[in-house]
Amino acid sequence: MEKFVINGGKSLFGEVKIQSAKNSVLPLIAASVINDGKTYIENCPKISDVLVMMKIIEKLGGKAYFEKDDLVIDGRSIDCWILPCDLTREIRASIFTVGALISRFGYASTCAPGGCNIGDRPIDIHIDALKKLGAIVRENDEIIFDASYGLGGSVTLRFPSVGATENAIMSAVRGKGVCIIKNAAKEPEILDLQRYLNALGANVEGGGTDTVVVRGVEKKLSCEVRIKPIPDRIEAGTFALAAVACGGEIRFLEESLPKYLFLSEIFRNNACKMYLKNDKIEGVKVTERPKGFGRVIAEPFPGFPTDLQPQLVAASCFAKGLTVVVEKVFPGRFSFVEQLLKTGADLSVCDNACIIDGGKELNPAETYAGDLRGGAALIIAALGIEGKSLIGGTRYVDRGYEKIEEKFRGLGADIRRVEF
Ligand code: EPZ
Image (tube, rainbow, N blue to C red; front, top):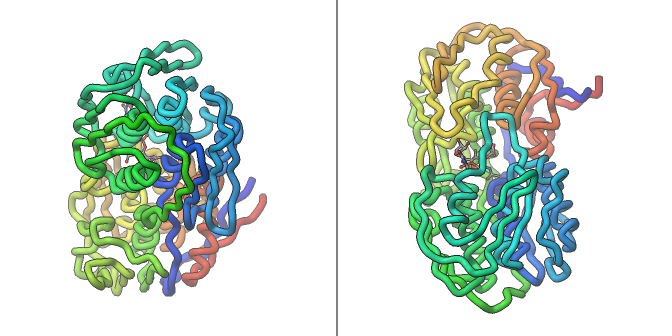
């Protein structure tokens, strides 16, 4: 088994290049199925979830390959609307392809998607939205969507689901109808999707707000489109929270992050400073052990991102005093805590909240990642603890971070992959 081996206790100094946002790139790959042309996604991370989506594109008849750091999707030969169940069960993002297939063919077939073990991953909001917009959905082992009569109307999501918002948008791109999605998710990655679809010739408005309006276009969408997704706010936040645990100063290479993409709740603390230039974040500096962060709620955008909740819990183990992290998106997203407890950290989970009494002396430990962001949390903890730690489950971390150990080594950390 492959493990990360970390000799922790070193401060982090240096520059790190932030990848294009994973949660932009994955829906963009799905959306490229609508394009009967070539799509270029710039600075695309070569993470395992991207590699699975590339296989799905190939199974649908398309081509997907890298040209240096750009991912190229050639959709001209896509001729199938049945998603391969063996691949859809591997990743959550596969479900986004349903909407794109509906726009291209009027039909889609899939099996329930996979995804990280962070609690239930139902797709009822996706199915309900597509039904309310006019699709006929038959659910057996496979789920078949028939939207050949066209989509139109309005739907209010019971929860601002990111994926369901993206799926509903993509399903409505081609056709005669107008589709209105209310209580839509407002994550910035949805704006990337809107930018791409409109560059194809679609008519999408309101992305990034709670009401999105899609006016169907009847013409085939076929062009060469190049898109540069926003930087990955979760990757940047992961490095920033590692600086909280280890101390040090990290600058983000090339990509400075818009202020809204960041952790204002965390970096108001006097020990944690953000470098701002023209209202953009160029880096962070942590000069001393911060105080506890008080109560932080992980909730839909523009709240603190659930995808940074585990990393914040880990960083809070090094802050002196109390932090309470409340998880309002995936209430079950605390499975990593039992691993963190092996270090002697003072953590307890009650319902959907984790209470951390930070600043204790922690010990290196052997832990195991069971999901992507939980794995990132274990890396942050190990980097902050003096001594040798081991972390299994590297494959989970590789789902969302490209060569994370190389990036941390570039910041002075002693971390490597070892086969045991
Ligand atoms: C996207 O997942 C992201 N994944 C997740 O990132 C992220 O945590 C999540 O949005 C929330 O921001 C991608 O974009 C590929 P949701 P998604 O639908 O769309 C419930 C990471 O670590 N729900 O917004 O699957 C669901 O169980 C990953 O990068 C239903 O009940 O998330 C959850 O409690 C993890 N029924 C809540 O809604 C549904 O049909 C939010 O889920 C859909 C969702």
